[in-house]
Length: 127
Image (cartoon, rainbow, N blue to C red; front, side):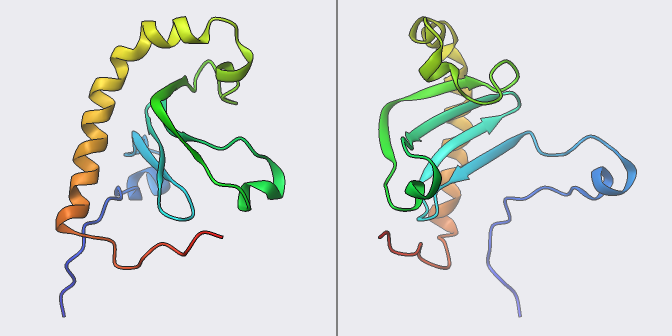
């Protein structure tokens, strides 16, 4: 039979077998219950939700939805600490917020695929 699905993956065969560059430039981060938590494009990551907890507590506590996405430059901040630790993050964010527009266009395009191809399985219940 045929399957009506939307494949959001990338053909990585040349990357894995011939050492070519990865075909992936983006990545969508979802929580274990199916919430879109963040989006990465190249060196930039937008965060839509925040998890304040560490260790096993991440499994017991929920994410907080952000009113405005936070932006991270993963090349200069690979551990994503500037949001909490760097003075002046808010000014830096305002100076780089223009990057969010094309990233959000890509996110919205991806999310629109769920209209034609809804998830086959519901996310497990929280708690």
